[in-house]
Length: 336
Image (spheres, rainbow, N blue to C red):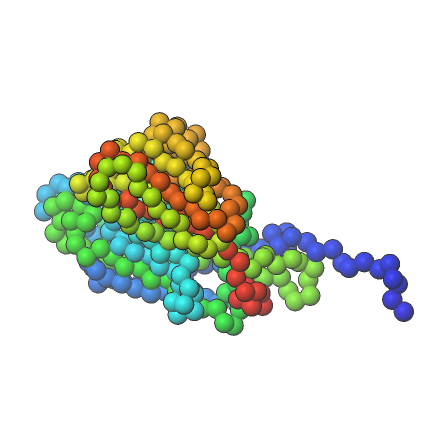
């Protein structure tokens, strides 16, 4: 007869009973050049944490060139990560926005050095000399909240029988999108690396992560007049982070006066003048702040609240940038 005072075996946290692994997904895939596309299907193993995408190619210029408004990263038109044949989108952003997000992951780090240091030529290259230039553009694609302290928030169980994850990559359709004096783009390849955590063996006293999903999506909003612009965050989950980039007359602009984050119409969470936004960025990330790129992370809980992001402008221009939200998903898609 069982002892009425018997206790259940204590469960260990997932991060104490797993191992991180990184592997390349197949071999490098070729893209046709401008407007080229490719799709990767992830291996069905482990709990997916993040992906690393590397684009390589040869950019030929008719004369010495210069980067377009959004730099070499706008060579990558779109990166999408979708579940179950597109029924749910985890990531849907442009290359430049993904680059800006990368700069928020680790203090002082950026795929291109961010003005702090010169990266190794193996990890980043984007020359603009006349003739052929070998380009290497690496980007981390977020799946869970981050690769660090919140690594187990939003992991995707790739071994669940009903889960299939595809990664779609598309390139810009015109060379002027990313560099001046463009002639040709050739020998373009895409490599994808998958970082995941092992699932514990059946019956092991390991607590699996909660069934959650983190989405990173980008929206572009036209601004036709000066004054305040309101953007209502879509109603799902909890807002974790936002990044905004402002463009006026085809160039990044410092025409930003103020940024506010407001919940329930009158609950102002952040109200930041331009100088405060710049000061906070440099304090948080130890990098010089990009021209009029505003971001905020660790926003906190606002369950069920309609939220607005407001920007005051001195000149009309479009606003673009990603929002990161986290919300619960059915346990069947995250647990084996």
